[in-house]
Image (cartoon, rainbow, N blue to C red; front, side):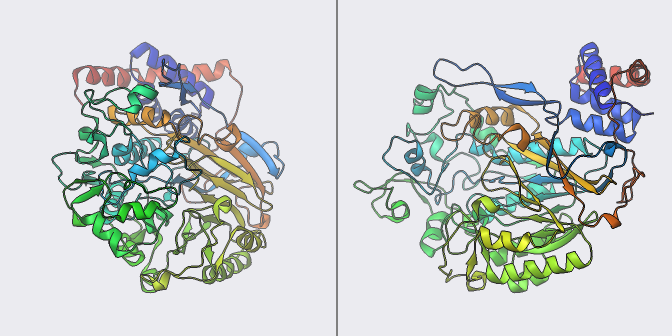
Length: 606
């Protein structure tokens, strides 16, 4: 039995309205009863932005704006690199089906080595034309771990492609997994991805010791009794207990698929900008937190000096040795020790020995090449070392000869490979891959090889898709800033000499903490509503590209998965009486299950 996506979504709405159950619960029950790939795809679509997403509601008196649900967005067909052929939906075969996470920024929001006090100088009226530490403080940052877990919960519930019904095979997180290069942040990130009990708190785990209970009016305080600029100037509400709830120990669900890693500037540089020095680390693990700049200091010119100045305003905090900085070598080692699959999450013992953070992996029938774009000399933007670029070209030569499709992954994309720093890091000499190469050099190499079909990246915290001369450049928004989204990426062989790369945006699941965190980030005066959305064509899209090796196509006319799980493609058809009849029959088959589920929900059982 096969039911169209449109009919399935209509059926979900009707049964949800009749039963009083959430649409998500009804979708799960209906798809479990039906079980065929088309229904699995439709059920998956119901949990993505194809069905609904979020946006601004009606602003309050001071501008604070609630987050409301908005209509879903269909896939936009983009034909800059190839022309769409009719009937391709009947011939599709999945080559790889993955989840793209990026810029999770799992944060120790109480760390003494953070520089929240610089955030106010980015508000535009404080005298700084630019400040390297943008978003040094976010009102919702205590919930960073909860946001990651909420995203993984939603992705596990989706489980399948919203296009073909093929199962999700793998997940990759393309850097800025942590916020400040700290050991405790890294271990929290690994715990979230692997699953199990995690504690987002640090220092004294019985209480909060950060800037949001300091009394400084430049930070939002959830406590209603504290007046601050976020409440008086932006209309932020009070939310007693938010910090404590966000930092409480909880059980993380984990990625639910094999997951792969990637290095970002916040994983390898202090606050994502500066190479580590011993003075920073002493501050980070110590019992004193700097909360302002010394009198007479201009932070626009000497932002790091403000952190280490002996006369800087300070407050006591609980020391925590787990706030130490993590070297590249330890970052690799901790991934090798992770409980999740695959072992090392792409990194190997060879990476550990050489202290390199680039690697290859075979996922589906596509070769993944994961790059390290962090400049060890500092600054937030990226570059690629000369030795790594030579390695990349050698890998592309092999893939081209083997007629193997390639996807590149990195933290920085071409838009941000513009870091000119050539200063070696004296504390990590093996990381100093000099000279550094910027976007034009890397692009010149990649475009020589037609095997590269996509480059997936993050860093800029926005949704953007660009047709490069020979491949698609796909950038995805962050978890930590608006909009908190991830992206499904499925490559299918259309069996007609073209490939389609389907990208589908996913909003995280909501509970009291994460729904409120989404609203707080939406109202952030620096990067709120609209900051990272991109245009419609940058979100849900079908990206067409000529198959570089059409003679290897496994799709033509078969409609079966090449990774071993046979599935028929979702057919796109008009509404019909037959479709509604099938839907009606499906509703009858599942009615008892839905009623039972409703009864369990009402009694709290199950």
